[in-house]
Image 1: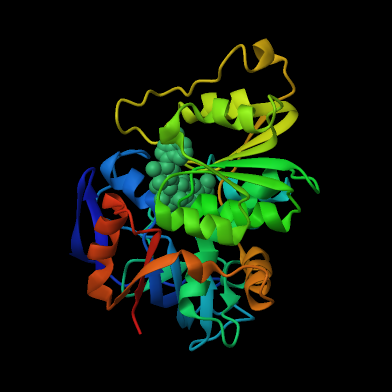
Image 2 (image 1 turned 180 degrees about the vertical axis):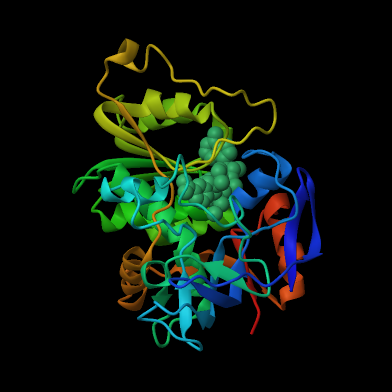
Length: 356
Ligand code: NAD
Ligand code: ZN
Protein backbone atom coordinates (compact mmCIF):
# COMPACT_ATOMS: atom_id res chain seq x y z
CA UNK A 1 0.00 0.00 0.00
CA UNK A 2 0.97 3.64 -0.41
CA UNK A 3 1.74 6.02 2.45
CA UNK A 4 3.07 9.52 2.95
CA UNK A 5 6.09 9.26 5.22
CA UNK A 6 8.92 10.89 7.08
CA UNK A 7 11.97 9.52 5.24
CA UNK A 8 14.39 11.07 7.73
CA UNK A 9 14.65 14.36 9.64
CA UNK A 10 13.77 17.15 7.24
CA UNK A 11 12.55 14.89 4.43
CA UNK A 12 9.12 13.55 3.48
CA UNK A 13 7.84 11.47 0.55
CA UNK A 14 5.52 8.74 -0.72
CA UNK A 15 6.55 5.17 0.05
CA UNK A 16 5.24 1.62 -0.44
CA UNK A 17 4.66 -0.54 2.63
CA UNK A 18 2.92 -3.80 3.47
CA UNK A 19 -0.64 -3.45 4.65
CA UNK A 20 -0.56 -3.61 8.49
CA UNK A 21 -1.54 -6.89 10.17
CA UNK A 22 -4.55 -7.11 12.47
CA UNK A 23 -4.13 -8.68 15.93
CA UNK A 24 -7.08 -10.39 17.69
CA UNK A 25 -8.20 -7.22 19.52
CA UNK A 26 -7.23 -4.78 16.75
CA UNK A 27 -8.71 -3.25 13.62
CA UNK A 28 -7.47 -2.13 10.24
CA UNK A 29 -9.06 1.11 9.07
CA UNK A 30 -9.17 2.82 5.69
CA UNK A 31 -9.08 6.62 6.13
CA UNK A 32 -11.82 8.80 4.67
CA UNK A 33 -10.66 12.14 6.13
CA UNK A 34 -7.23 13.18 7.37
CA UNK A 35 -5.62 16.27 8.82
CA UNK A 36 -1.96 17.19 9.26
CA UNK A 37 -0.89 18.51 12.66
CA UNK A 38 1.67 21.05 13.80
CA UNK A 39 3.17 18.09 15.70
CA UNK A 40 3.93 16.41 12.34
CA UNK A 41 5.86 19.57 11.46
CA UNK A 42 7.84 19.43 14.74
CA UNK A 43 8.51 15.74 14.14
CA UNK A 44 9.79 16.06 10.58
CA UNK A 45 11.43 19.45 10.32
CA UNK A 46 12.67 19.90 13.89
CA UNK A 47 13.45 16.26 14.59
CA UNK A 48 11.70 16.88 17.89
CA UNK A 49 11.21 13.20 18.80
CA UNK A 50 14.43 12.03 17.15
CA UNK A 51 15.05 10.49 13.77
CA UNK A 52 12.50 8.21 12.13
CA UNK A 53 13.06 6.37 8.85
CA UNK A 54 10.27 5.69 6.36
CA UNK A 55 7.60 6.11 9.04
CA UNK A 56 4.15 6.95 7.69
CA UNK A 57 3.06 10.28 9.16
CA UNK A 58 -0.25 11.52 10.53
CA UNK A 59 -2.38 10.88 13.60
CA UNK A 60 -5.67 12.65 12.81
CA UNK A 61 -8.17 10.48 10.96
CA UNK A 62 -11.69 9.26 10.54
CA UNK A 63 -12.33 6.23 8.38
CA UNK A 64 -14.08 2.98 7.62
CA UNK A 65 -13.27 -0.27 9.40
CA UNK A 66 -11.80 -2.70 6.87
CA UNK A 67 -10.95 -5.65 9.12
CA UNK A 68 -11.34 -6.57 12.79
CA UNK A 69 -9.60 -9.19 14.93
CA UNK A 70 -11.40 -12.27 16.25
CA UNK A 71 -11.91 -10.78 19.75
CA UNK A 72 -13.32 -7.40 18.71
CA UNK A 73 -16.92 -7.13 19.91
CA UNK A 74 -18.32 -3.70 19.05
CA UNK A 75 -16.98 -2.91 15.56
CA UNK A 76 -17.26 -4.63 12.19
CA UNK A 77 -16.04 -4.00 8.64
CA UNK A 78 -17.94 -1.11 7.06
CA UNK A 79 -18.42 0.86 10.29
CA UNK A 80 -17.57 4.55 9.99
CA UNK A 81 -15.30 5.46 12.88
CA UNK A 82 -13.56 8.29 14.67
CA UNK A 83 -9.97 7.34 15.47
CA UNK A 84 -8.34 9.12 18.43
CA UNK A 85 -4.85 10.49 17.81
CA UNK A 86 -3.84 8.78 21.05
CA UNK A 87 -4.56 5.06 21.33
CA UNK A 88 -3.46 3.85 24.79
CA UNK A 89 -2.80 0.29 25.92
CA UNK A 90 -5.79 0.23 28.23
CA UNK A 91 -4.57 -2.68 30.31
CA UNK A 92 -1.27 -0.97 31.17
CA UNK A 93 -0.10 0.17 34.58
CA UNK A 94 -0.18 3.88 33.58
CA UNK A 95 -3.85 3.54 32.53
CA UNK A 96 -4.71 1.92 35.83
CA UNK A 97 -3.18 4.90 37.60
CA UNK A 98 -5.29 7.24 35.46
CA UNK A 99 -2.74 8.43 32.89
CA UNK A 100 -3.67 6.62 29.68
CA UNK A 101 -1.71 8.94 27.38
CA UNK A 102 1.52 7.98 29.15
CA UNK A 103 1.41 4.21 28.63
CA UNK A 104 4.81 2.57 28.25
CA UNK A 105 6.81 5.75 28.92
CA UNK A 106 6.40 9.49 28.37
CA UNK A 107 3.79 10.17 25.69
CA UNK A 108 3.64 6.44 24.93
CA UNK A 109 -0.07 6.55 24.13
CA UNK A 110 0.94 8.53 21.05
CA UNK A 111 1.71 5.68 18.70
CA UNK A 112 0.83 6.99 15.24
CA UNK A 113 3.77 8.68 13.54
CA UNK A 114 5.80 8.17 16.70
CA UNK A 115 6.28 4.46 17.44
CA UNK A 116 4.42 3.00 14.48
CA UNK A 117 3.14 4.00 11.08
CA UNK A 118 0.64 6.82 11.17
CA UNK A 119 -2.69 7.30 9.46
CA UNK A 120 -1.48 8.84 6.16
CA UNK A 121 -1.58 5.41 4.50
CA UNK A 122 -4.16 3.57 2.43
CA UNK A 123 -4.76 1.52 5.59
CA UNK A 124 -3.66 1.87 9.18
CA UNK A 125 -3.66 -0.25 12.32
CA UNK A 126 -5.71 0.45 15.47
CA UNK A 127 -4.68 -1.32 18.68
CA UNK A 128 -7.48 -2.41 21.04
CA UNK A 129 -10.29 -1.48 18.67
CA UNK A 130 -13.08 -1.79 21.26
CA UNK A 131 -11.29 0.77 23.48
CA UNK A 132 -9.81 3.03 20.84
CA UNK A 133 -12.50 3.51 18.20
CA UNK A 134 -15.78 5.41 18.35
CA UNK A 135 -18.65 5.22 15.90
CA UNK A 136 -18.99 8.34 13.75
CA UNK A 137 -22.43 9.64 14.75
CA UNK A 138 -25.11 9.79 12.08
CA UNK A 139 -25.12 13.23 10.47
CA UNK A 140 -21.71 14.38 11.75
CA UNK A 141 -19.49 15.77 9.02
CA UNK A 142 -16.06 14.27 8.46
CA UNK A 143 -14.52 17.73 8.89
CA UNK A 144 -16.06 18.05 12.35
CA UNK A 145 -15.07 14.51 13.32
CA UNK A 146 -11.45 14.84 12.28
CA UNK A 147 -11.13 18.01 14.39
CA UNK A 148 -12.23 16.04 17.46
CA UNK A 149 -9.44 13.46 17.49
CA UNK A 150 -6.59 15.78 18.47
CA UNK A 151 -7.50 19.48 18.30
CA UNK A 152 -10.61 19.43 20.49
CA UNK A 153 -9.29 16.69 22.74
CA UNK A 154 -6.01 18.52 23.38
CA UNK A 155 -7.46 22.02 23.65
CA UNK A 156 -10.20 20.86 26.01
CA UNK A 157 -7.60 19.04 28.10
CA UNK A 158 -5.87 22.42 28.46
CA UNK A 159 -9.06 23.92 29.88
CA UNK A 160 -9.63 20.88 32.10
CA UNK A 161 -6.04 20.84 33.42
CA UNK A 162 -6.22 24.58 34.10
CA UNK A 163 -9.04 23.78 36.57
CA UNK A 164 -11.11 26.76 35.43
CA UNK A 165 -13.73 27.80 37.95
CA UNK A 166 -16.99 29.59 37.12
CA UNK A 167 -16.21 33.21 36.41
CA UNK A 168 -12.43 32.71 36.38
CA UNK A 169 -10.17 34.86 34.24
CA UNK A 170 -8.21 32.78 31.75
CA UNK A 171 -5.46 33.49 29.23
CA UNK A 172 -4.85 31.24 26.23
CA UNK A 173 -1.42 31.81 24.70
CA UNK A 174 -1.38 30.81 21.04
CA UNK A 175 -4.51 30.61 18.92
CA UNK A 176 -3.90 27.96 16.31
CA UNK A 177 -6.43 25.15 16.30
CA UNK A 178 -5.21 23.84 19.66
CA UNK A 179 -5.47 27.20 21.44
CA UNK A 180 -8.82 27.94 19.82
CA UNK A 181 -10.12 24.63 21.12
CA UNK A 182 -8.81 25.63 24.56
CA UNK A 183 -10.81 28.85 24.32
CA UNK A 184 -13.96 26.90 23.45
CA UNK A 185 -13.16 24.58 26.36
CA UNK A 186 -12.60 27.49 28.76
CA UNK A 187 -15.99 28.90 27.87
CA UNK A 188 -17.65 25.53 28.41
CA UNK A 189 -15.90 25.28 31.79
CA UNK A 190 -17.48 28.59 32.76
CA UNK A 191 -14.66 31.12 32.42
CA UNK A 192 -15.71 34.74 32.85
CA UNK A 193 -13.07 36.69 30.98
CA UNK A 194 -10.96 34.95 28.35
CA UNK A 195 -7.83 36.57 26.91
CA UNK A 196 -6.83 35.16 23.52
CA UNK A 197 -3.21 35.89 22.70
CA UNK A 198 -2.43 35.78 18.99
CA UNK A 199 -2.33 37.73 15.77
CA UNK A 200 -3.64 35.76 12.79
CA UNK A 201 -6.85 37.60 11.78
CA UNK A 202 -8.69 34.40 10.90
CA UNK A 203 -7.79 32.92 14.30
CA UNK A 204 -8.83 36.12 16.08
CA UNK A 205 -12.22 35.88 14.40
CA UNK A 206 -12.76 32.27 15.50
CA UNK A 207 -11.40 33.05 18.99
CA UNK A 208 -14.19 35.61 19.43
CA UNK A 209 -16.78 33.15 18.16
CA UNK A 210 -15.51 30.54 20.64
CA UNK A 211 -15.79 32.94 23.57
CA UNK A 212 -12.67 35.12 23.80
CA UNK A 213 -13.57 38.44 25.43
CA UNK A 214 -10.20 40.19 24.91
CA UNK A 215 -7.66 39.86 22.12
CA UNK A 216 -4.01 40.55 22.92
CA UNK A 217 -1.27 40.65 20.29
CA UNK A 218 2.11 39.40 21.48
CA UNK A 219 3.58 41.55 18.74
CA UNK A 220 2.31 44.74 20.46
CA UNK A 221 4.63 44.34 23.45
CA UNK A 222 5.19 42.02 26.39
CA UNK A 223 2.14 39.77 26.63
CA UNK A 224 2.19 39.47 30.41
CA UNK A 225 2.50 43.24 30.87
CA UNK A 226 -0.48 43.81 28.59
CA UNK A 227 -2.61 41.31 30.50
CA UNK A 228 -1.48 42.59 33.90
CA UNK A 229 -2.43 46.10 32.84
CA UNK A 230 -5.86 44.99 31.66
CA UNK A 231 -6.47 43.16 34.97
CA UNK A 232 -5.31 46.06 37.21
CA UNK A 233 -2.10 44.24 38.00
CA UNK A 234 -3.87 41.13 39.29
CA UNK A 235 -3.18 38.70 36.48
CA UNK A 236 -5.20 35.63 35.61
CA UNK A 237 -6.53 32.57 37.43
CA UNK A 238 -5.54 30.13 34.73
CA UNK A 239 -3.24 30.02 31.73
CA UNK A 240 -3.31 27.60 28.82
CA UNK A 241 -0.06 27.56 26.83
CA UNK A 242 -0.82 26.52 23.25
CA UNK A 243 1.89 27.98 21.05
CA UNK A 244 5.23 29.74 20.83
CA UNK A 245 8.74 28.73 21.85
CA UNK A 246 9.81 27.82 25.34
CA UNK A 247 10.18 31.48 26.42
CA UNK A 248 6.39 31.61 26.39
CA UNK A 249 6.51 30.07 29.85
CA UNK A 250 8.05 33.33 31.07
CA UNK A 251 4.84 35.12 30.00
CA UNK A 252 2.68 32.42 31.56
CA UNK A 253 4.33 32.56 35.01
CA UNK A 254 4.42 36.35 35.02
CA UNK A 255 0.68 36.76 34.38
CA UNK A 256 -0.43 33.90 36.66
CA UNK A 257 -1.95 34.70 40.08
CA UNK A 258 -1.15 32.78 43.23
CA UNK A 259 -3.23 29.62 43.17
CA UNK A 260 -3.31 29.51 39.39
CA UNK A 261 -2.81 26.55 37.12
CA UNK A 262 -0.65 26.88 34.03
CA UNK A 263 -1.71 24.11 31.68
CA UNK A 264 0.86 23.49 29.00
CA UNK A 265 -0.43 21.76 25.88
CA UNK A 266 2.33 23.09 23.65
CA UNK A 267 4.93 20.80 22.08
CA UNK A 268 8.36 22.25 22.74
CA UNK A 269 10.33 21.35 19.65
CA UNK A 270 13.96 22.01 18.90
CA UNK A 271 13.64 24.64 16.20
CA UNK A 272 15.28 28.04 16.10
CA UNK A 273 17.99 27.58 18.71
CA UNK A 274 15.76 25.93 21.32
CA UNK A 275 17.62 24.26 24.17
CA UNK A 276 17.00 20.94 25.88
CA UNK A 277 15.67 22.80 28.91
CA UNK A 278 12.72 25.19 29.21
CA UNK A 279 12.87 28.33 31.36
CA UNK A 280 10.74 29.08 34.41
CA UNK A 281 11.24 32.62 35.76
CA UNK A 282 12.58 32.42 39.31
CA UNK A 283 11.10 35.67 40.66
CA UNK A 284 7.68 35.34 38.98
CA UNK A 285 7.58 31.79 40.32
CA UNK A 286 7.98 33.18 43.83
CA UNK A 287 11.46 31.63 44.03
CA UNK A 288 9.76 28.28 43.58
CA UNK A 289 7.12 28.99 46.24
CA UNK A 290 4.40 31.03 44.54
CA UNK A 291 1.59 28.45 44.37
CA UNK A 292 1.69 28.55 40.60
CA UNK A 293 1.41 25.05 39.20
CA UNK A 294 2.63 23.99 35.78
CA UNK A 295 0.60 21.04 34.50
CA UNK A 296 1.48 19.06 31.40
CA UNK A 297 -0.52 16.61 29.37
CA UNK A 298 -0.73 14.78 26.10
CA UNK A 299 -3.99 14.73 24.18
CA UNK A 300 -6.44 12.29 25.83
CA UNK A 301 -7.42 9.43 23.53
CA UNK A 302 -9.62 6.38 23.63
CA UNK A 303 -13.22 5.60 22.88
CA UNK A 304 -15.04 7.29 25.77
CA UNK A 305 -13.19 10.56 25.23
CA UNK A 306 -14.12 10.53 21.53
CA UNK A 307 -17.77 9.70 22.30
CA UNK A 308 -18.03 12.54 24.80
CA UNK A 309 -16.42 15.07 22.47
CA UNK A 310 -18.71 13.87 19.69
CA UNK A 311 -21.68 14.60 21.97
CA UNK A 312 -20.43 18.16 22.47
CA UNK A 313 -20.51 18.55 18.69
CA UNK A 314 -23.82 16.72 18.16
CA UNK A 315 -25.57 18.78 20.82
CA UNK A 316 -24.09 22.00 19.43
CA UNK A 317 -21.91 23.01 22.38
CA UNK A 318 -19.05 23.64 19.96
CA UNK A 319 -18.63 23.80 16.19
CA UNK A 320 -15.13 22.54 15.34
CA UNK A 321 -15.61 23.16 11.62
CA UNK A 322 -14.97 26.88 12.19
CA UNK A 323 -11.29 25.89 12.40
CA UNK A 324 -11.24 24.13 9.03
CA UNK A 325 -10.03 26.81 6.64
CA UNK A 326 -8.74 24.64 3.79
CA UNK A 327 -10.33 21.49 2.36
CA UNK A 328 -8.55 19.24 -0.12
CA UNK A 329 -9.99 16.28 -2.02
CA UNK A 330 -8.01 13.10 -2.68
CA UNK A 331 -5.34 11.05 -0.90
CA UNK A 332 -2.59 12.61 -3.05
CA UNK A 333 -3.29 16.02 -1.48
CA UNK A 334 -1.85 14.99 1.89
CA UNK A 335 1.55 16.28 0.89
CA UNK A 336 0.20 19.70 -0.04
CA UNK A 337 -1.83 19.90 3.17
CA UNK A 338 1.19 19.03 5.34
CA UNK A 339 3.42 21.54 3.57
CA UNK A 340 0.72 24.16 4.10
CA UNK A 341 0.69 23.30 7.81
CA UNK A 342 4.42 23.87 7.86
CA UNK A 343 4.21 27.16 6.00
CA UNK A 344 1.21 28.49 8.04
CA UNK A 345 -0.10 31.14 5.68
CA UNK A 346 -2.08 33.92 7.39
CA UNK A 347 -5.45 32.56 6.24
CA UNK A 348 -4.83 29.06 7.58
CA UNK A 349 -6.03 27.50 10.80
CA UNK A 350 -6.34 23.86 9.82
CA UNK A 351 -6.45 21.97 6.51
CA UNK A 352 -8.45 18.77 6.05
CA UNK A 353 -8.06 16.19 3.28
CA UNK A 354 -11.23 14.35 2.29
CA UNK A 355 -10.64 10.99 0.66
CA UNK A 356 -14.25 10.39 -0.25
P1 NAD B 1 -0.19 26.75 15.50
O1 NAD B 1 1.21 26.94 15.09
O2 NAD B 1 -1.26 26.76 14.46
O3 NAD B 1 -0.58 27.82 16.62
C1 NAD B 1 0.31 28.32 17.54
C2 NAD B 1 0.35 29.81 17.34
O4 NAD B 1 1.09 30.42 18.39
C3 NAD B 1 1.01 30.25 16.05
O5 NAD B 1 0.11 31.01 15.30
C4 NAD B 1 2.18 31.09 16.51
O6 NAD B 1 2.44 32.16 15.65
C5 NAD B 1 1.68 31.58 17.85
N1 NAD B 1 2.71 32.12 18.73
C6 NAD B 1 4.05 32.13 18.58
N2 NAD B 1 4.62 32.78 19.59
C7 NAD B 1 3.64 33.20 20.41
C8 NAD B 1 3.61 33.94 21.59
N3 NAD B 1 4.73 34.36 22.17
N4 NAD B 1 2.43 34.19 22.18
C9 NAD B 1 1.27 33.73 21.62
N5 NAD B 1 1.25 33.03 20.47
C10 NAD B 1 2.41 32.78 19.88
O7 NAD B 1 -0.22 25.36 16.28
P2 NAD B 1 -1.42 24.40 16.73
O8 NAD B 1 -1.69 23.45 15.64
O9 NAD B 1 -2.52 25.18 17.30
O10 NAD B 1 -0.66 23.61 17.88
C11 NAD B 1 -0.17 24.29 19.02
C12 NAD B 1 0.87 23.45 19.72
O11 NAD B 1 0.25 22.31 20.32
C13 NAD B 1 1.93 22.89 18.80
O12 NAD B 1 3.19 22.97 19.44
C14 NAD B 1 1.51 21.45 18.62
O13 NAD B 1 2.59 20.63 18.24
C15 NAD B 1 1.01 21.16 20.00
N6 NAD B 1 0.12 20.00 20.15
C16 NAD B 1 0.16 19.38 21.35
C17 NAD B 1 -0.66 18.30 21.58
C18 NAD B 1 -0.66 17.63 22.92
O14 NAD B 1 -1.11 16.50 23.00
N7 NAD B 1 -0.25 18.27 24.01
C19 NAD B 1 -1.52 17.87 20.59
C20 NAD B 1 -1.57 18.55 19.38
C21 NAD B 1 -0.74 19.62 19.17
ZN1 ZN C 1 -1.45 16.32 16.60
